[in-house]
Image 1 (tube, rainbow, N blue to C red):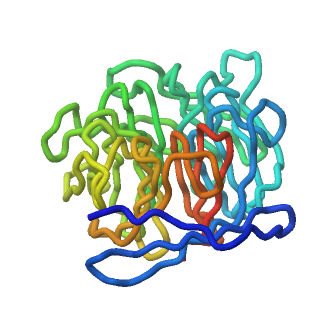
Image 2: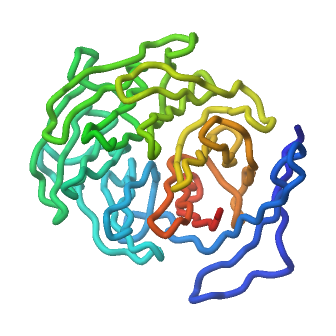
Length: 317
């Protein structure tokens, strides 16, 4: 199936200094439907000052809808309001617990923020006031250690699921940092992984894993038992090139970002293709080295447009 790329309406509108762009795309030749994906605004640019980025990785959303964003090269976490207004930052210090390359981030049921460091294997637990409470795990391949950690999630069961690109597995911890178990190993068979980039869960507790090296999405239950998968390498609808970020909306629809294709595809919870949008570029609605994505409490899709040093925000409802 040929990808139907977005086209722009006649002009941009300035709404409170944000860019409004409407992207029109066909949902699928199979359904004949049409969907509108609306780019509401962007925020951020290149740099190391407040509200700037050098290498955006992933997002977490707190109970108030505020966004926490990891920046691997600035070695910090920045907090923003849902409209992109900068609030604060933390993690970058000169202590032994400082972040060196933060990537994965997730918030537990108590509002504490857990940040995984790709280089050290350490996971830092911060309070909602950004005070360091605990450091756990560490770099390695033994149980309880992690290697090249990526985009993680706190499940309804209270456990933290951490994808490890370096070990091609998922490690599981509780909110106190105690190791529980791992699942999956490196390979190409169903249930095996190759450099997993993200794990996120839906309302039923199913875990969706961006199996980056195998160019597919795999689904597991909370115990790590394989359920099903979809996708193969390519640029057609339902195919992937290096899937990275995963976001799941209130209806359990699954959004998958692809580093290799610089686009986002939307699927239902069974992995059935709905529509896609985006392409490589620097203009609004285009992406470069796309990484993490998330659905905010407002229902909007936030996209880490990493090479363009910005976050793009879409209405995909």
